[in-house]
Amino acid sequence: MTPAIRMTKRGLLVAAIAWMFTGVAIADTDFETIAHEIPPGYEPTPAYDEQGLWSEMEDFELAINKSAVLMRTGDLVDYTHMVVCRVAGPYCGDLRIYVVRNPNFNATMSPNGMMQVWTGLIVRASSTDEIAAVIGHEIAHYTRLHSLDQLRAMRNDMNAGAFFDYALGLTTGIFLPIGHLTAMASALAFSRSQETEADLLGAKLMAEADYDPHASYVVWQKMLEEDDAAAARDNKPIGFLSTHRPSEQRAALLQQVVTDNFGPSSISQFADQALLDVLNNNYMMLMEDQLDTNRYGRTLELLERHASIGVDMGLVNYFFGETYRQRGADGDRALAIAAYNASIASGNPPAEAYKNLGYLLLKEKDLVEARGAFARYLEIAPNASDRAMIEFYLEDLP
Image (cartoon, rainbow, N blue to C red; front, side, top):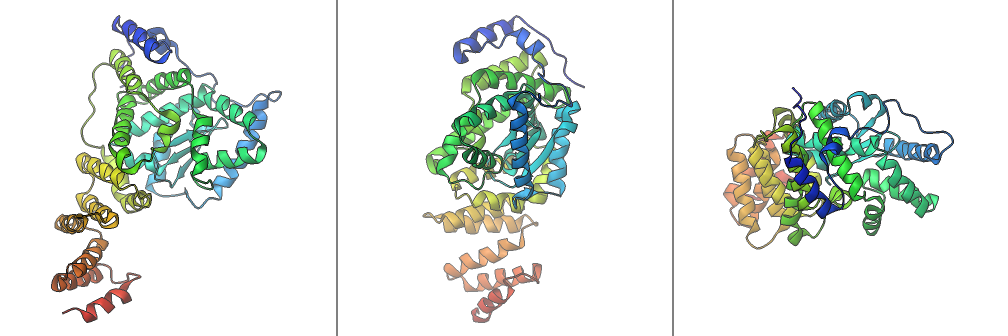
């Protein structure tokens, strides 16, 4: 059942504090009255520039439909569509939902109803409620016409060619030089008032869809913690935080408003089964994409979170091993060997755990154990594409 919306005197204090920290008053009446600016089935005004912007976004959408990074089928796509439509409610029919294979934490909403959800959002979530929080926030930007305002501002500052390249890069995360990303993020950053409106309306949309609105601030807190913990080692921001960077004060204020209006949190430490199924079924792809970023500190932070929420430890430990092996710092070889062995001990290791353990054991001159690991790999994966190479190693091992 959707939590009842109630107002308290405590919310007035929250409003005052919010004004001091952000310049935007989060008043109780704001939360009660915050609503969509457009109805379901909305069409752009013909005599306004909005129609032209919609047309240009349709060109971007055609490009995305041809992209190799677009995921078209599978349980991850079905799950994402389910969450989006549940939060969007009557607006679901207006949205075209694209799941983009990109390891960064991001979701975007274009003014013509084109929504992109990056796989980096799914892999970083600790619950379906957290995914719903980001989706609700983006839908609020859409129905409050924030996306249109930002796109219009960016369009006015660029020529047509640059605008197309930037928007395409934003929606897919590819096709752009890395140096353009900072400028693009700056061009599309939402204002404080727009973020406040999206925070409030997004939380209401979550509650109406029977998701826990407390996840609306928990997800920001977790992303800030990950960003801070990994920044010193990786020095690379999470994509979504570039355009939606929440201050600690803003997250705290949202927590207070949600608590005042929906009561205390009952968020579980462990992920719900729907999210766990999607993560476990797609973990190899999701984490291989994450490893390809070479952000080893951030990857380790993510793996520790996965271990805490109930992801299959055979998979988690395998990627601990992969992270240490690829990073190659002092002591990492021993850590990788231990992680591969832990994956194998779980009873559900990827076949690659045996193969990569074999490689490291060869380097350690532990030839007997290396032979055993390689042989077991071929038993589990008899049709492996690298079978001939592994057999070559086995011929020379005792």
